[in-house]
Amino acid sequence: MSPAFSPPLSIIALLLVCLLQGCATPDPALDPLPGPGTSVEQQRIDELEQAILELGDEIDPDEARNAATISIEYPLQLALEYEITDSPLMHNFLVNIGAKPRGLCVDWTYDLLVRLQQERFRSLKLHWGIANYDSAFRIEHSTVIISARDQSLQQGLVLDPWRHSGQLFWAKTLEDPEYSWSPHAEVHAQKRERKALAQKRSTIP
View 1 (cartoon, rainbow, N blue to C red):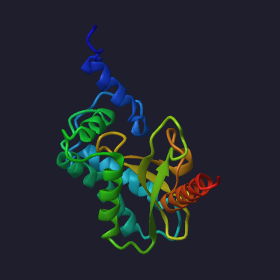
View 2 (cartoon, rainbow, N blue to C red):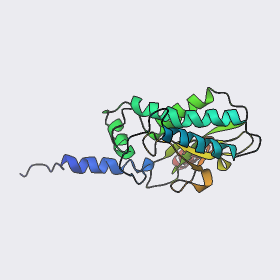
View 3 (cartoon, one colour):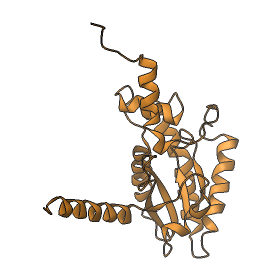
View 4 (cartoon, helix red, strand yellow):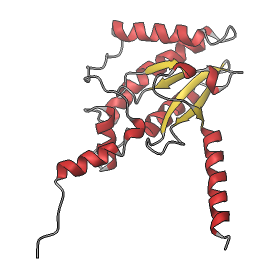
């Protein structure tokens, strides 16, 4: 009797990585993250501040500056706390097998959102965006989206710290080259409706 086939660990790892495609983007080589106070970081803060101000004339410049600074600097702190040493996709794998504490896209989103909410912005609105929720091939991806107070998620800016391992990616919501975003509440409402419909169908003889 031949022994049971046991696939090599490398194949198992590859399959597990493929299951994490929901938070996957083309990964450039990991560059050292800019440290606090560096000219590179200050330039990025300036650029993000300007992008936030361009969302609407009613936005408070001080709030735009504060939001930009937190959005650039706080993910660098999170990268240390999450023990980021690999690409985002590989880090997802390490979190899911228990080798790293946190650092999935939902962790980045939750932590950054909570930190920004502490500022109690009056002219800015914070959103939790979800992408790929209706895809059969890619797992959901989450991010923070910021907009003017009276604007929708679709009119805002994506603030995605997961995508480049703590170095913030931002873009207008409708111009994100990787993801199509929907509001968190809307997505979960649709999920509840689908679940209720599935349960109803299962009771039909």
